[in-house]
Image (cartoon, rainbow, N blue to C red):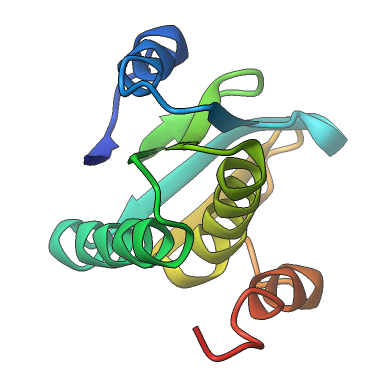
Length: 150
């Protein structure tokens, strides 16, 4: 049972975790990404292509479900203007055993960060606005989940 959403507004991680807990597995793992305020950041703005972005997110959830035989996946990504301290992304996985839930959660967030088509613009207190460039470290983290061909 997968739940994948794109939304502008906040999400309730407790509600999402309760839904996965109710599936009766042995482990639920989650990750919540928070907008950092480093260097005077005042806003992170996320643009996306709704159809394409949602399709990639759904494909990643399906991939994880199959690879780790998950009972359920939740993947929520926000878009639009976000402020430091706000939750931007939530990924949670439920499985019969903790190892699968933990690995699937880590893999999903790593791949979501590099493969889902989002364009991020940062605004700072000094008036600067910069587009966020891909990072080599993020690509390497995502690639490690694909090395075995799955």
